[in-house]
Amino acid sequence: MSGGSMQYSVLVGLVCLAIASFSSSVGSSNNTFLCLESERLALLQFKQGLLSDNKYNALATWESTKDCCDWRGIACNNHTGHVITLDLSFNFLRGEIHPSLLELRYLEYLDLSFNDFGGMMIPVFIGSLSQLKELKLGRANFSGHVPPQLGNLSNLHTLDLSNNENVSSENVEWLSHLSSLRYLNMSWVNLSEAVNWPQSLSKLTSLRELKLSLCNLPDVNLSSLSKNALETLDLQNNQFWGSLPELTGFSKLRELLLSSNNISGSLPESVGTLSSLEELDVSMNSMTGVITESHLRDLSRLQSLKLSGNGFYINLSSHWDPPFQLTSSLALSSCKLGPAFPKWILKQTNITELHLSNAGISGSLPDKFWDLFVHLYSLDLSINQICGKLPNLSTTIFWVVDLSSNLLSGAVPSFPPTLRFLNLSTNMFSDLSSSFCATRAPYLGFIEISDNLLSGDRSFPITGCNSQDWDYCF
Picture 1: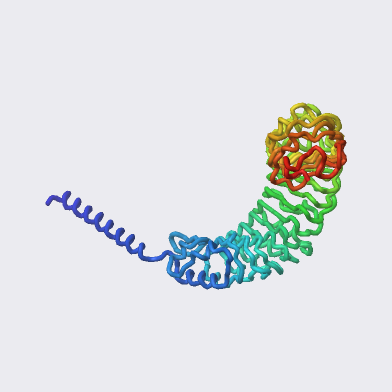
Picture 2: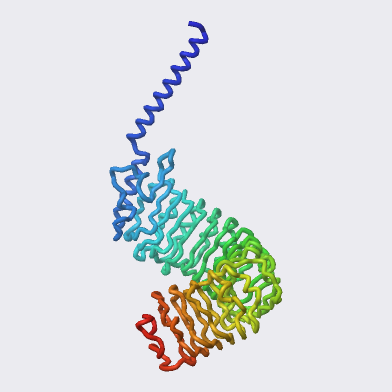
């Protein structure tokens, strides 16, 4: 045999040996579990403390004879077999959270949100799951103080403790140790005693989303927050007062949500430089001043604008061309807009909510007003001086219509079957048309058309509207 032939034979032999070895390995792996026995037993012990009224809950798949990596809500590292994910959200669970979870030393993701743990305290031992990157305990009926041991989770980038109304934290200094945190949601957690919260949060230089609505937060200077990285700032429904600081440092903000506080003063013109802003909501405060084109000049990505419940005067040129095309809400109730209906609003044809109550608007609505806003499901033009007649609205998609306290006249038109709320009171309507009475609105829960010029009894059933024709004429 030549040297070349011998080398070829040896090479073929080695290849065959490798294939046989691989096949043997695959065959062997088919007979073994990826899940580590110690972690499987820990999960079964954890399961023993939990109950659910939902027979389809994830725990129903947890059987001692199966690989725990195949159980619902569990994910394992494909190489090591260690459990890295435990997701039992939305499983209607109740009971206790057993510390056997400490055996899951490589756990990175823990989600127990949307369950009912009966007011138990957030377990202290969770602060020892040192590899956690995401911890979600929202809306799970916990109570008591947030354990400061959660500050030991230095790898954490997502923390959600929201919607646990009986949870509180008097000192949030522990948050400052979560240097990797990018998302923090503690909405509904009582932070009324946490006077140091801005100082603690200012150390979280990676924080992108901050949600602390309905926390009873004490008043602070918002300028003390770390600004450069924040994309979402949600501080709605708290106790802030005083004026807003300059906003130039919040250059990456996409959402600025400060509604339902006690903020006064004017809206800083620097808000107009926030070119990434998609949602601006400062409604239901005590702010005043003039809103000019400078406040809106660079907001090309804006999708929702809510300034209602303040004393703003909207001073925009009748020829102003807005840089944005809103796709959600435009709410300017209690702001001074009129007397003419603003032309720039007619360009916002993709909005779903238009609220201009008590805005000083008078006269007739512009031609084609009712044809422009085809995506509109909520309309509030109440408490103005709008006159004229209403067209047939049966082809719209309205859920909510409030045109009360205006000067509208003529016949009450028909409305779409999607309607849930209708208020036409305190106008000058003089006729209930047959088409109005033929309206079928199975979801309608409120209707008010009193204080008009309609004949007959002012309360339902009204003369001229046959309840046999319309079940909701009452």
